[in-house]
Image 1 (cartoon, helix red, strand yellow):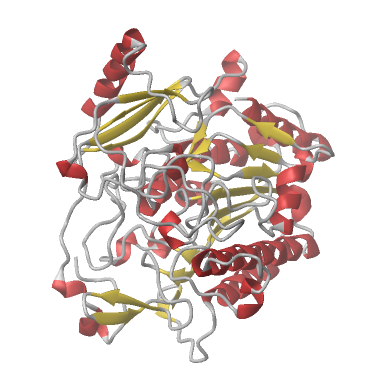
Image 2 (cartoon, rainbow, N blue to C red; image 1 turned 90 degrees about the vertical axis):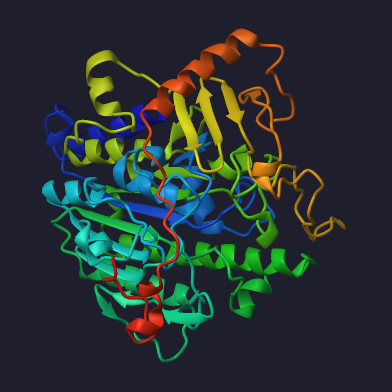
Length: 493
């Protein structure tokens, strides 16, 4: 991939600046790596795609770095996070079906080596501030047991931004921790203020001589729709309330990103830092987000649910005009790429493309195939081969194109007649799209390209044979917070 060539060039630039040999990559001083994940950010919810979104800090770094125009994630939160953390597609870890619901004994299996575990072997200090959502029924599935030196945040998939409570059936449970200790916020502080405070503390306390891996999975802009009024007031012309609040949450996230990058600069760390920014899935159109002009939304296999707003930045990639990379990559590719920059060899078997080995041996290469998902519970799949995308079964619950609500008299999101509310009761025939020519997925080519259909179907069958059954455990009453003093607490599975 051309983008990976640029990352390799950045590594070489670091070596030149340090007077080191340009071979191998591991000879360079490892960069600090800041991996930022926005939660539920839509394709059309960033300023470089939609100028009406006020994201000046993100815009500046995106414009000076490399905008990743074909960066793919999963259709839900937990599947993307397992891909970031392991380099495996979720159908190889058992986390391919929807998300880990609070109170269910589901988790990232501990036989998978995580990115921070390998980075620690490379001498990195590893920290996470924000959302985990990869399992909490047993302590061994929580961040400080999976390779992180410190953790501030919450284990679950979402919580009230002010009370830090998340529901279990009719009960509520408090979910905020500093490492493994419950962190009591008696003032009801909006979580993003705490998030920014603790991220900056990590940066200020870090020994600059040690490479830093800081994983920053924001709670923003996931629901519930809650933001201080000053951010919502930035969008007085947006008449749809959900869209206005959601937009304010995006701008609050942008401000936080700016404060964190300023803290890196103040410490002198930014000169040798790689910044990665991505979302975990497309935006939920029923909750104020927007993916226009892409089809679909979060929870679907359409591009609107799986193509993420993303960029990569370092001072070694600075560009006056900006650069947009259109070659496709997937969330699993970050794992081997980051390890390559850190000078650490990936584990022997991963799904991510190990660009470092390929570049050193055979020159540039690009990913030409990946599987969006294989979910045997809902009998739905999606696979990309070069320009073509094949989908079987129901793509999800949002199957239309949704304009930005609340502007120019566009109505708020309403349920559309083609929404597949009962996905297992609706028959969807296999569909084929040329994503490069038709990124909005408007023209089904399944009948006009039978040879392509047969070939990609055979590739899908190949990958399906390697999959593992999806975890699908029901709620376990032992996890109810009322059994643990009203706090979401590991130790019941």
